[in-house]
Image (cartoon, rainbow, N blue to C red; front, side):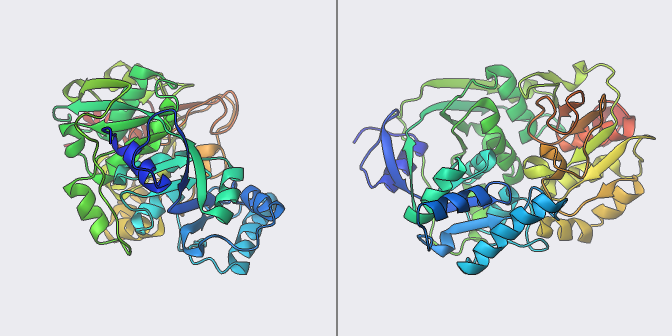
Length: 423
């Protein structure tokens, strides 16, 4: 059997084959199928059109209303109703109602629903987040999800793998968001098109799980099929207390073939800001110049986790957001919300004159909870800054890590925590 990357190994195992190679078309069994309130209604319609009456395994389907919830209007209420009725009719155990849920890509790892070695598909492009656990996870269309609900399978073209090695020790205030923004800046938004991005090296081995999830979340922003990180003791520690079923660690063979190997020295990376209108349009914080902002958003499936909120609180403690700047903080799940509240982070946020939202994707996709008017600028910890992404076509979104977003809210313009003298 020829040497394989970890992505190839996971796909081979799920396809019931001894080995696979890039370019090969395979049918593979899925461990989990995911959809949200925007994509599930389409998948359910396809499921019914195909004559579906029951799903292949109710325990392997996860439905999470998170994009327009709590419902922002009649249309979104109807979408959620359709999904809720489907979950009720088919008695699906993993339907997460408002109040027990949160943003899907933060919720699934937290709840132990996704595990190392899994093959996961989701009708949302940021499904690639779960590669942080050493799983193969990728976004697919709602039709594929509808089919997988019936068959428990999906087809794939085995991707080539780019290996990205991160060397050295991170500077202060630099986290996974900066590493991935810097990488996308280097290779471009299509630099990894339909490829697996394998993140490795000592800087990754020293990265906490929240930052790893952030990095894999944004693999799609480089065109990646999936992002994946070799599982290690940090993975084991995270997964052990959450897993309710067996899991398996896969590691690339020493002789595995890569389409490209990139080496990145993280000691040279400052906090990064992606300027409009592409995630690849990055600049280091020292070169952002004077860019006034109207809004700062800290949250989303990219950066709404506990570590992110703790970092934001460190920067905001004893400070207030600038006059006329809206500071919106959105914990990614109910559990993160509760823990942040317990740790006193909410007091810090409220003293800083921030508004704290219930978990929702909200403003990230221009849904609600922070839409931009014409000419407004937002610094956001989200993952995309395309034209009109968060509101008016003539608004602007700047992507950054939580420390930069929080510091910018205080300064009233783009800037980092060091400028505020935060220890």
